[in-house]
Length: 138
Image (cartoon, rainbow, N blue to C red):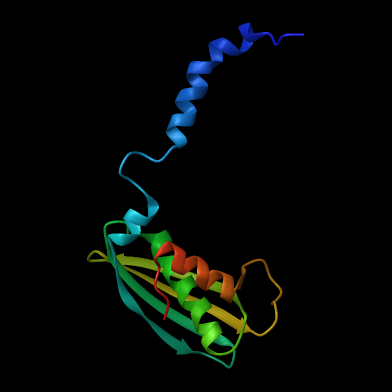
């Protein structure tokens, strides 16, 4: 039995337009946005034996709350690996912007085993993802 195309055909232009909206625009990519970000460094402060604060700063086109949060996350993952731990758990992140500079003040716990909680990260996987996305770590 052949499909009834009379029901689908009127929808086709709208479906195609919707799919076109999902495609990346010509000459634009997430990596291009990251290349325009000036990563200004991360200050790390040990608050307790397994509790670490990361203060990340960035600016430029493409910088914003999400980019600042991801920069701090990447730093936390690398820091966990440097300390010989495999995991981190997000505690909190505050993001501010002043004078074109975005700052993330993030706190993570680091641990050798997967910690309890919803916002855990596998440090090795995260560092690899950050490298693939062009986000520096500590």
